[in-house]
Image (tube, rainbow, N blue to C red; front, side, top):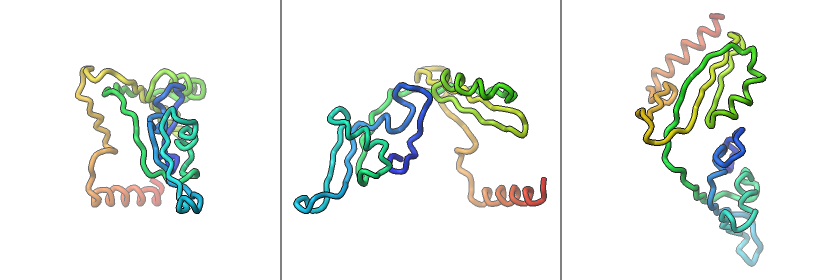
Length: 161
């Protein structure tokens, strides 16, 4: 994640919006001097130097990321609620909405003039609820079923449906 830049971001200024916010230590391998066998192994720890801040977001440019140690978060649940609205105020509401909800997300459907707001906040682990997010996209699906779904969708697009 760190080496490819797939580490996310957030509107929230405090720690927690991106994967690199949780890096406590990392080991990198980079070119070295002849005396070092042409290799340099750097172990960077949070608080030891400012190099770790650069390495966290370096996309691997400063060397090959060999090992990463992450800080843990206390266990928590998330409360999810969906709200559908028209998109007339989307430009004005997007930043305010994201600033209110830690894991907020929205899906815009411009052809329908609609926005689905996902109100998604952290709640204590002892909050009422089973803590299961049963999103259909995360369920195991047989590859044969996926092939049928994709072929039906593809043929409908080609037919203009």
